[in-house]
Image 1 (cartoon, one colour):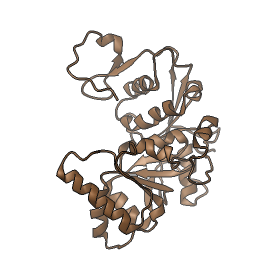
Image 2 (image 1 turned 45 degrees about the horizontal axis):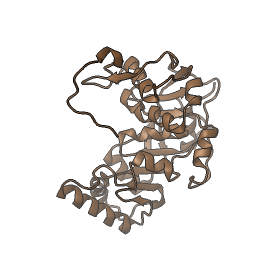
Image 3 (image 1 turned 60 degrees about the vertical axis):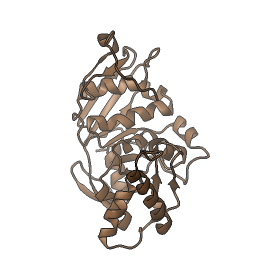
Image 4 (image 1 turned 120 degrees about the vertical axis):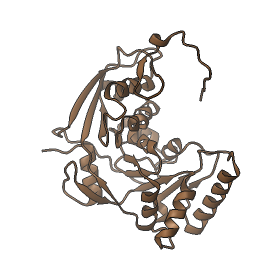
Amino acid sequence: MGMTFAEKILAEKAGLDRVEPGQIVTVTPDFCMSHDNTAAIAKIFAKIGVDRVKDPERFVIVLDHTVPPSTEKYALGHKEIRQFVVEQGITQFYDGGVGICHQVLPEKGFALPGTLILGSDSHTTTYGAFGAFSAGIGRSEMAVLYATSKIWLKVPESFKVVINGELQGAVTSKDLILKIIGDIGADGALYRSIEFTGEAVEKMSQASRMVLSNMAIEMGAKNGYIAPDDKTFRFLEGRAVRKYYPVYPDPDAQYEKTLEFDASSLVPQVAKPHTVDNVSPVEEVAGTKIDQALLG
């Protein structure tokens, strides 16, 4: 019997021939990302009793959440992070103004097919759009990674989400993922690895695919994988920080669920207050007074 993407890549990173859903494995991530919360992580790391980050080249730190810092507390946090990366020899540091972490890692060539990426941000699932197993973890877990470069993970069950057809007109991948979350529910894919596939996904730009993977966490998913293809490889040309080896699910892999959606019939969607899965077509709320709007 074949393996899903999650099973295959976690087996590889654990040095095992195969793994099963629910199995606990100890793995070494290829890259680990943290942002402004690095200041808090560094304080936890200091309590572990280890002086040095084990593998500084494994860590990428991006200041992006409070740029410029809006309070003295945030400004001091940024100062502490700058001192920490110098002391620990972490050269993959991107100070405020470079961009949002989930855009920076792909643009700087860290989001690579066949890699395991863990980040202290729930939307680390974004890098699944490049064929990585990427997941969010807590601050204490990241501090332990600073010290040991190892962590245990539970092998997730997998959902195969097949998206047929093609998005029409002004409908975007944001509408599509809102529709999927609305149908599955905010916790309907809890700790599952989602494999997005189908004609509509193949036709999407790399940026549009990132939207699907980014929001996989909004239905509780551990990972949101999209098989890398020529679009992915072209994006990574001249960017990739190292050679990479794509990992694909086996044709006879077993999935907990297979779900199908039709992109061609999709209309613009909106998530209404107060949960992300309270989704309906925009036309159903047409005329609703808006007090504030944010573009960007």
